[in-house]
Image (cartoon, rainbow, N blue to C red):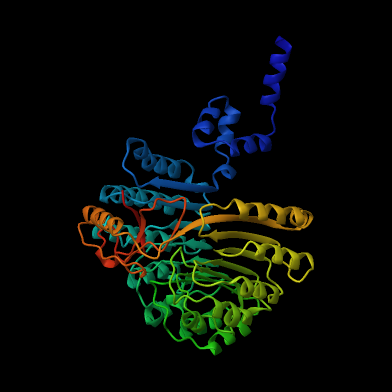
Length: 510
């Protein structure tokens, strides 16, 4: 027994460094600290730079004793291991009040200051969903945070290759100031990837800003750019063509109903960019921008579109007729479209045949995700065409909405379809299909509306208008069966004291 014990201890002591680092890689901070106390070799392993190259620091926005240590731990980590950092992601989860944002700002000031002095390796920085336009951010706290971040970006401008400030919600001047920080030393920036989706506050017509155009002209080697459609203009496309065409590969463009998207962009501008950047892929993400005339103004045939996502977010509107989009608009990309996502509440129209025809016409389409009111037989037809090699899908994810709570018959049919095409599905497809009961309300009960309005008035101290069909009030058109019947969607515009210019919030009336 003694020999066995000595042998086991010896084997751990002789473990190669590369194996020991691999073990430490899977341990959390607390377990690493405990393991470092075992022996000198393990203590040295804990300070291996490879263990600390990537870090995600999460701050909870809820006040509690447990969460107060998050701020101290973040500073401890940066002072201890910040010099090894190459990829840093920082998250602030839904700050509850101004105290939380003040603590976050103070912590970030120390964190960024120390990193700026000791780190020379950082190539990737992500600080997402800060929502600086919310009232939990006092003006002084907000201004100080933006100033500290701008100073840090200046210091890191030569080495940063990726920056993600998605959801910052800053003003035009603040946003351009932060982006200009990346090029202040040489008046040029060679960063390759930027994510500024929802970076600017809602309702800003960024596309008409000369300041924004001047800022974007300083980026000379962009490979991937993610942003909102309210930034798109002929001037921006010309800037990308002139300065980044040699490197540009991907444009990810989000178009939200609350963002201005009525500007005129000429197809020639897209054509000139595509000609100079032949490897360019454009991916569109539409949220509640469903009207055909709006989509037709945006989705021009000259754009090299690879992916389209159309999401109505459970809202329904008789003006949102998807049939013209499926039959007239999207087929223009038959030779290039590779990914298609449709999440629509089409309770007022049948789209089975039009959708199937679109899929068959797109010769390069390999990814399909659909949440819609469909007949179960749609899946049988789709799989039959896939088996006959009339389409080339490799991923099929479908949620079939139904207005009936009881879906046993549909589920049985789906099982039969799976059995029929089992060999195809198991060998060639990433396949996931379910039925999903929905309750469709043509009218909203007055009592529910009154309770909802009273609850919102109690929470926000305001009177909330409601409407049965308009997304500008409280809507209960289509609600998942699994949700409470009192789930409502409320758009409070600028009236909501919790947020300025925020998208529709989901409120549950209790």
